[in-house]
Length: 336
Image (cartoon, rainbow, N blue to C red; front, side, top):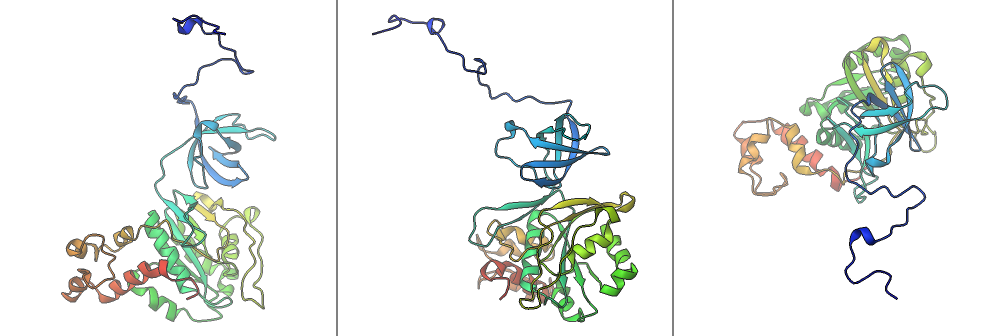
């Protein structure tokens, strides 16, 4: 039975409002021009801890952001209760454009990339010289992720009282990566802390390293006492450390000299998301030599123009070797 006539108008149609009324849908989002600026310090099961001026504020992500997630280091716009008092909850309504992004995947076959830190200036790659043994392939992968994400790398070598750093430093000498060497006794005396802190002044630095290398111990030496995190020990059987840091956390350095982002220990660093063509940008002395390369050149094939470029004396052969070693990391496992 026809409820309406043959020539109905929209006004003739009766609509049944839902429980929340009949407000029409719209793609227009509120601008929230009065939103406060904040920085994400940590994320825990959907709840974000943010710094707004000098206050710690707890917030949730607004539904209008869709699937876009905020991560540690993000600059965000926040509305709602910004007092930071107990049981209050604000709302993140906008994530500002990022200047850099550190990403990783679980392994090279995993297409799902995870954003670890946003807006960091540099990546401190922490590795022990012994107990556990250094893993150069993992260091290579972290370097690739840093170059790809727009971060400057910093190599931090710990436990130099157990083994000398010469061999590892020689391996990365051609890359020109700045480094700091520390020992347990120097950490206790504060001498190593001063050297590391000079590299962090005025910057946001993400710390990454596999478990047991002393990353959290170093972090605790750098930050104020009330902000220190729990530490673990290396398993004597497996030679691996125990994960003591379970989530990324941004910590202020004393005297407002910068920020340190402590990240959970990693046992793998997948690079499925990395476009190899972007890695060459970290080698400005080699990049001009790629102009004669064939299209989609991997820079590690017979027709690559970089071989002739280096042979003509435009760059150090060790630099080309380092580039190709980094580009090959996706084909090799960290333990190889």
